[in-house]
Image 1: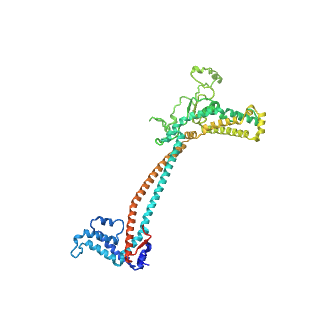
Image 2: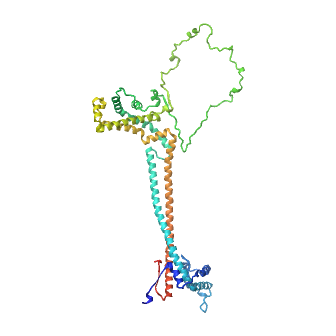
Image 3: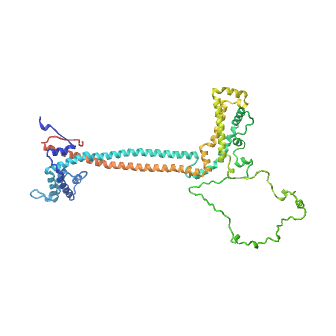
Length: 510
């Protein structure tokens, strides 16, 4: 078989060992390469202006094959220095020819080229590709995070908008808007009081049932507050307590500090303007005080002599008060001033409001139990007894009628316990709650701003990664091209040493 037809296959990772084992290169080639690299560094400092040289020196380290091309370029640029014997007098040409000569000694150039080829394929190219892959993954992660931040921003903003909508505010000046909403509370409470009027049948059913089960008549001591509201509406605590309408109502002021208007707390007592002619009570001599001629006794205007009843008989008690201009009020405290907690309405005062809600919940529980008893088959005996011996109110009750009563009670309960009314009631009676509510809403706005800032940061990071990828791709292409070129040069050089047999470097760049 013709040996020329057999290719030489060499794994690039073992190329240098293969060259040394076949004595194409010496083991100590690295000692000589240091001198060559130093000469190359010096020669580069003095190079002619030429596009070909600039292209050669871009992208990778200069090797032996670059030096050969540089000499070919210098043959053109340094042609004027050539003498009659064909030698160049240019120092540039002499320097590069000396470098090539040192490279060719013991085939140092082949060992260096093999090492460069191995390093490019094993480290340089994979490293750049790995950087690009990481940057691509970073872009994907940034896109995902940007979407997550956008969703979070939208979610937080929706929660903020929903809460503001529930409260009925715009959310620009939260505390002031909340306080402004308090003007709606009287109308809300009046509506709630009107809804309570429909609960009278439910109360009558409760009383009838209680009278039937306990055999005690006139069970009208339950739900006193609910009965009062049904009859009188949402009056002040003053009227509920004393049974009289006050002339004036003075509710306690709101103790709320606004962000742009700090709360003023001045606890000093103003005694008014005091004249310079003040009385010094520390320097008064009791002996100098003239009490008149009292002769040791106090004159009360009553004679000590005679019958004491005589003086009393002289007093006329039959005085017409209207003619004298003196007005005496009727018994009681009619025409008083409702101040402090007494100025609040029954549904506004925290204590009575809680009692009102408790009574509604008690009535609701009763109706639920009655509805449950009406709906199960095991209570047929009890129902028959109620229908036979109970009052007309009990006998006429059906599942539908009790359901309607239950819905009325639940509607009245919802009219004073829905979220918006709960918030407004807490705003009015708890300054700390106002601060907490405003703070929680502002925190959501702060969170929205933070997510926006995070989106901008992620976007900037993604753009930076994209730019780095754009910068690395030309570098990768250049290194791959230079490596392919060097690989072909090494294969051709080894092929010449084996009578132009085909040489394949396995594991290289294709």
